[in-house]
Length: 109
Image 1: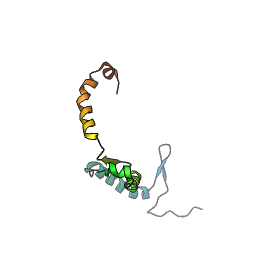
Image 2: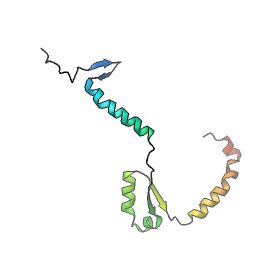
Image 3: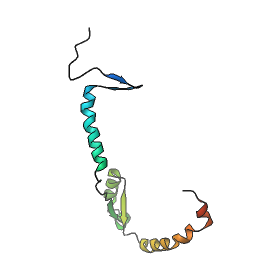
Image 4: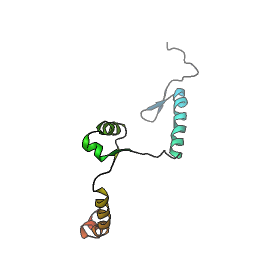
């Protein structure tokens, strides 16, 4: 003989091909769904990556911070790269001419 079922937990029932549910599931998943919908509606907090100076990478003083940042978020901002500002300016100035070339026009993104 099977044990008597309790009112708070019914036997799982078949849903479709492979999913089952019970009254316990509804007590767990309804609040989770509500939180998920709230998270989608709420503005996410801004993300600010860890910023590491280029000089710290060169001399090794920022290696621990780099490893920690890569392990936690996988994103790092490197600041103070020598010559970066001039190179960025040159690239931005050349972008329209590059985009107008036949090769760029034929490229599918």
